[in-house]
Every structure is written in C-alpha cells, then in structure tokens.
Image (cartoon, rainbow, N blue to C red; front, side):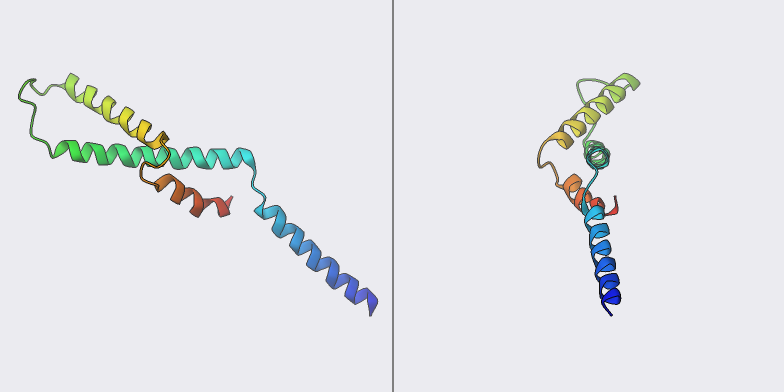
Length: 104
C-alpha cells in the first residue's frame, strides 16, 4: 500500500516539475519572440502608413517620380521601425507576445 502511495506521489511531483519546467522561459527564445513581435508590428505600421499616404493628393511642388517614391518608402519604413521600438506605439507587439509566449 505504501508503495502505491509513493508511486502516486512521485508521479504527481514529476508532473508538477514538468509543468514548472514548461513555464520557465528560455531567455534566448524569449528575446527572439519579442523581436519577431516587434518586427511584425513594424510591418503592420508600415502598411498602415503607406495606406494613409495613398489617400493624400499628389505633391504640387515636386512631380511624382521613381526617386520620390523610393524616398517616401524608405521614410515610411524608418517611421514604422521607430514607432515599433517605442514603448506603446499600438500595443500590438505586447499583445502578440502575451498570446505567443505560452507556445515556446
């Protein structure tokens, strides 16, 4: 009888240990996940900025050219990345991180 109780206790403690191990995050994977979430937020912000820019009328001072389009694209990318690196741009990266951190 004592052997059965010890076996049950050992299995319960082993399951608890596995649960604890699963909940302890790996710092390297945690950083990778945070970077991926920030990258996704930057892509999302760039698409949003470009969509907003497309609603504006053309520039009266400068004609549209390939060079100005490239410059605007680079400017939009830089703005999106800097917004993504700020603490609370949209909260999308924090939301994604909270949702995905349990799957590590």
